[in-house]
Length: 308
Image (cartoon, rainbow, N blue to C red):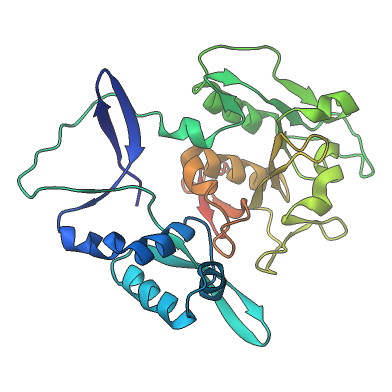
């Protein structure tokens, strides 16, 4: 379900925010309780009940009492689990960050102008309407240990056109070949297109990626789910901290072969906010696995499914 955004009027200025709308105010009673609200605030990020109990100095059973009430009203959801001392610890997170109560006869005014909800999620690559990244694609000439030619340029163009639509000004050029990259070029926000066989910058980062590649078999390996993906149609998306400059980020689109890379970019263009919410096995990791499909039989990947 896609989020709905509402304009909040405050004097001469308007603010845009996603809101969870309740028509029955009794749903909010649990949040009116001071302890309940303090507990709920801690679940803005994934938390285990025992960790919340320790932080607040409350009995664990009391925390579970509120968790059950939160879950009953759909305020939080289970996002992951991990083994702790022989038991399975479950982690929960709030589904929404802002709430409002709607009167039953209240009318909403619909706006035809688009809400730029995606701009925030595309930071730091798009900042204040300005492009702040370099796209790095593999060289079309034989290069690297495997002497491979990169074929990802066409799908990189699709990605560039999509990202450019969120920018109010252009800075050219915005791309480099992997063989042109020098140490000084590594320190900004980077968008890498192509797997470690055809893009040597992706190869340098491969071991750091939560979803990476077995360079011998060229399979995609998820270190999060422990799954292995072997078909050419599988692709991966990773958003990580730039190891050459911790204040910047690197976004990696990589497939086992070109169809997988195309599927990764297609999935991102179709719904970037969903992609950037994180892996379904661990929401704290912005690492995804997708599979591409050729729906019309023309030999070109035109649909992508998110697997994790």
